[in-house]
Image 1 (cartoon, rainbow, N blue to C red):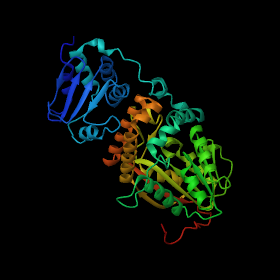
Image 2: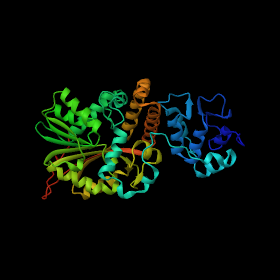
Image 3: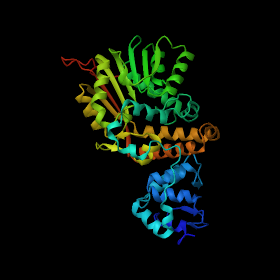
Length: 421
């Protein structure tokens, strides 16, 4: 039996007036009895997760494993509890000092760390092997981990567009599908795509941009490191009768041998590249363009220009090796690679709304999603999507479009005096 009640010990790290009820497997509870939200620590394993990996990683492990559950909200939509916790300056996830204090009261036997849930990717020692980060084999492994979960699961969460990047809402009442279509059309206008031109879409996902361009008479090539994405995309191309114009390959963008493209789109790839690889990345994209060709780079950025890892939870469960920085750093490397910036804008709040739409889809199809990938993975996605939504709402992260041209040696860019998008 613990020397102190578990719920009381956990409540010590929370604001006293936070309307959350805590309960634990030892029968203890704490917090307002009439709180609209409840958190229950069901197992001793869950407590050991919290104590041996303090912070967001320990809480995520307990949540994904089902050792930490909630009431007053759907397991696929944690917005009520995460928004509440992130909106008070006094709330903080437990750190090492908190864990030490808890262990002193609850017993040192809880310091035996349990194996992490199977959804966690890469053993800890690989976190520190920088030499292999972003090698071709490791990038392929990372992309497989996140994107090859299940095409059916992604259909349930993303909706018919199968688009896993920020939508752009043309009106306040637009649907997610309308906003995704508007995003593709906006990118096509920014790239000034015309029938007969050639487009390269790197990190093309399930081929949404490739198929959109092909419908406009553009010859489009997409490449992705996800075999599941490439298979789904190529089948969609054939279903839509676009085989004469569109193609998606299971391929690293660095292995594309074709060049002289009229346009290159990179929609959600830069986050996976690593900041130290930006020079080679933008140089490679520039080399694929003809003179006066256009590049549209769409990526998540920070609200500052310091290179920042994505955090323990995101790094182990969602985007291993992910790295974000500010739009200024992205632009600096783009310019240093010989590309000329023509236009930039931030769609931060559009991404918050996009994520809310994906959460709605997950909740609506929860039972089928659980049947497809298991409850642990479904719970992981609920946590990840809501946490990301809050990050965009609070401006921890932004979404930046940068339009650039491959200006020729005489300073000609082919860019008009006034843009038309």
